[in-house]
Image (cartoon, rainbow, N blue to C red; front, side, top):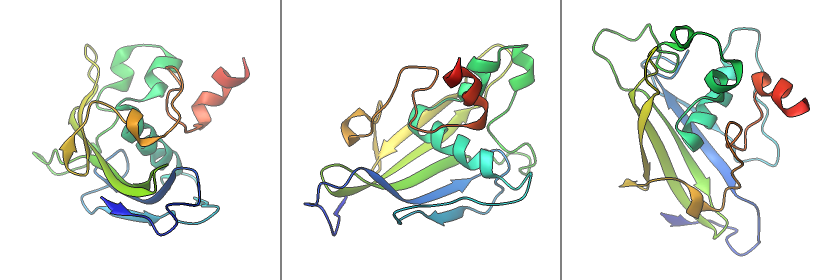
Length: 165
């Protein structure tokens, strides 16, 4: 954990950098996005990973996907929905990681590793670490969380119907 440059400014919690590997459309090479700006925009054509990026943030914060809870339907539709199904056989290295400047000004590395993907009969499972130490949740980081199914501070396209009803 490192002290941020503007630790005493009272700035809100900020994601500085996001790294994703093996999650949904993300493949074997970890991808990194620098988000340390007053405004970060993720722009791209259809089917380029914008929604997967937002869902990766949701997974990092909550360890699950609200899509399955909000859309309902047959659970089999969501079988293996988080890990990239095109990873080489035996490659189960699926994770999302972020460097987050917390309310106390410290920069912490938060990582969530997918240990079991959704199946028709079970929820997904994951391991969460903060600065390499196992953590039960992220409540101590100063990130505002809501109630399920919209617990993560991420507004996803498929959540809009739920929000406006």
